[in-house]
Image (cartoon, rainbow, N blue to C red; front, side, top):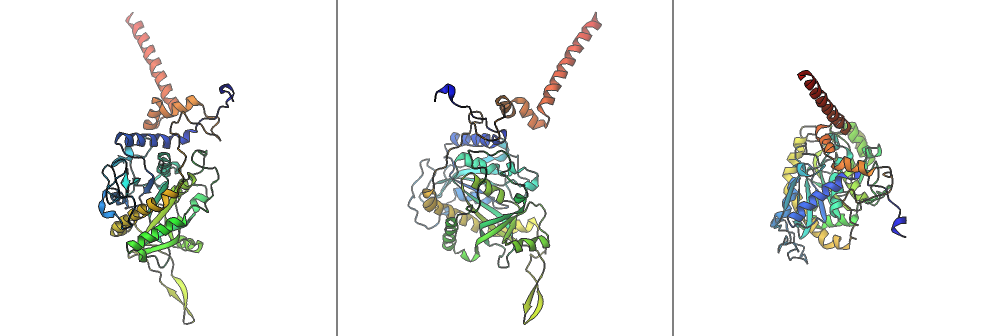
Length: 422
């Protein structure tokens, strides 16, 4: 087929531009500091930002006799496999299209890139929640950025309320399935024009959670003598928040089969799965949810059994952060050990993901973006008027019209002044 007969393809949809620009900026910073692009991504939940400490601390090396104990090609490795000699911290406020900060206590609002056990790793210290007023596109923005950077596996952590009777504060649940009522009702990160470079229009979710990753967590927990605090095959219920669940809502979630409940995570892991990345989710149980007493049979008689609740008999964010602080060190060790085993046993078996073109003008996709005008895309993305619009929240056409009126006023004023002088 000659160049003249090569069919033209529709342009990139404007909604697919922000994460490409953000990833381009992060890659430029990595190149500037001679740091490898990451292969593993970590999203830190409430109060769990200290997970990034594992990136530069020899104390988090596990005894798995790693076959790769030499330094990495960038000089970031160490004899223990976890020492980081070059690390980059980037505040969210400096990344294009990222919110300037995280408004929730326990979320630092920055990302850290380095190596852990010789594996290039990126750690997002803080996430965006829909209850903060963010759109679903913003909630999953870090996930799509990771895919553009070449991340193959995403490890998501969160602080969650325990719904099962045998879940204690400080336990860790390995998520194997989820219930997401907001997503079923349309509050879904996959709604809108589909980015074919990331994934299909209709992704399955029955294969979202990989059992082999859960097996790795079990091995690491046994090595750390933490298995008594580990719960497997957990189902996580995603609710939008910000209010904590009512007693009846908690009872409903239990009837649906949920083991833990929280206000995050599912949009992120769904976006990661859609983009072809492997997903592992760990929930730190930070409080026992409050729900009705249940009638039980004792000696043939029905009596009331009081379900254990937290000491204040209601959930609160301060209690969540306190529970995280008490278990934070063990969580860091668990995550560091999991990443080490993933690097040894899991990543070598994964196929490389197809690179994502980060040039918003140079890449085109099919689908609903056929009617997007190239000049309009350039204006929306790079034009000074568009940047002013983002700062002033004023539509571009209003800025242009205002400039025209000011110029016309200046000309008329000049002529009137000249006429008066005569």
